[in-house]
Length: 121
Image (tube, rainbow, N blue to C red; front, side, top):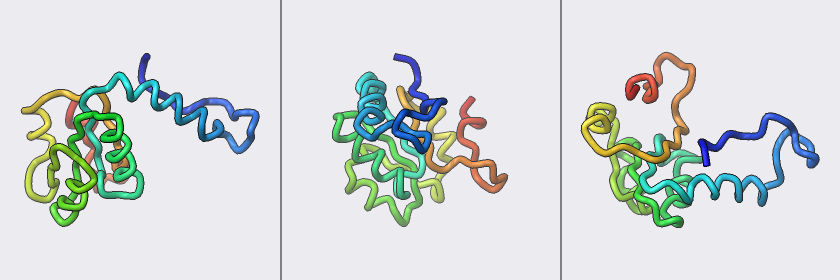
């Protein structure tokens, strides 16, 4: 399947979202075809869940977080942990393997944030 996108229209359940089991199945259908996953913000509130879910699916996870949180993220199951405060993560990623899926929980419109997508393209 192509890249997963959230629904444009509200579901019959209201509040603009699908029911949790249906949404989970849609995400799972996409993730099952990924082999290598990059998780940006792997120690944050959604990043740590993404790391665990990817490992539960036996995917190879490369996680980006601060060096302070590296041991925590490694303990979640990440195969590779890149500490953004100790290296140029983009240069490291460009020199390495490609990913089948990128879970970005950190990039925002704030100019102070690293725009990984812009730098990797």
